[in-house]
Image 1 (spheres, rainbow, N blue to C red):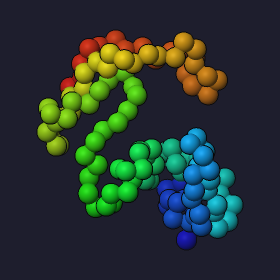
Image 2 (spheres, rainbow, N blue to C red):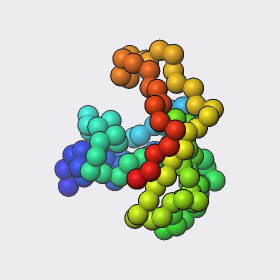
Image 3 (cartoon, rainbow, N blue to C red):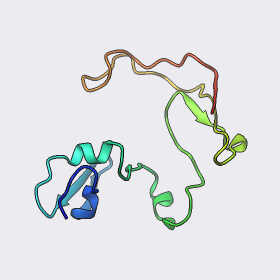
Image 4 (cartoon, helix red, strand yellow):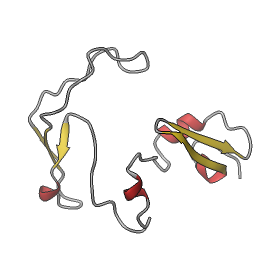
Length: 117
């Protein structure tokens, strides 16, 4: 099976390991220059960063805890699966003063107090 951004590069990996708290190492069976796009792009399994205690749970059980650091917090008590997702302003959120070169050239600002989908 050829490795493409759509077939899932992690299926073709010999080894995945955490080098340290900020670095993940992928050792592939053969060269695959599209790995960054395969990990970040739509159409495949999106990698999730989560605490080890959540990652150690069964892959057949949904994650019951939502963790993030963005401008909104998820309101699990208002969530209705397939019908409603609600988010409220996260008061402790602080946008970056200056965006790094790989990010959009403007800081991210929250302009609403709540979101409902």
